Image (cartoon, rainbow, N blue to C red):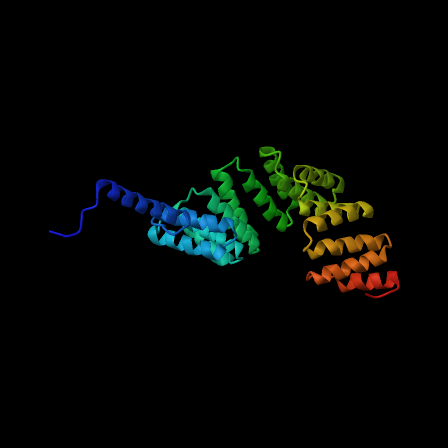
Length: 289
């Protein structure tokens, strides 16, 4: 016999409720992760916040609990991608594909990692596989178009970008990509039409303004180019190349003070204008930086 009173049923129920409440509270703040899915969800949340190292730790735990969890390998690969650790990312995508050969997203992600590593042929093979698995996936065509573009196979790139647009007429990136390929083929009017569409779909698309500026320069419409580079700077103020291209257009219009100011802005952001351009600007303006 104990000399302590036995808790009443009501008290015992309150205690149970308190324990359950504490458990759910801990789960809400990430303090109670018991399954591979829990760790995956936690890793995804951290990934979305840009906490890639912390996300990787959670994916590690998910994989430790379930070594055949293809999605965990895929998502850990994405985190390594964001850290520019492409070789490690590719290893994770390899494992995800080995575990689930029909995981189209893993082929896409591995293709992107190969692209970033300069291995365009391998990237194209992965995008081919993704297209075979998901023939209506506009992103697969868009990404393969990017790989063909980097191989300077501009006609093939245009075909893939056009297919992406056919599948999703509101795909701004595909219009921008096709515009670049058209520009490389000296089809500036068609390129500008595509950039116009990309910007109409996404008015905050800094790269589209920059690329359209390049096409305007080729048409010697420097004032239009300056407007586009100025908008690109507004949207991407840390990109040195926006300033450099605006400097070139200002110089073409003999706006030398503005050109020199943009050269300085470019250098402050880590850009390196060519010695040829600096010498040309020095000669034309009659002054040095």
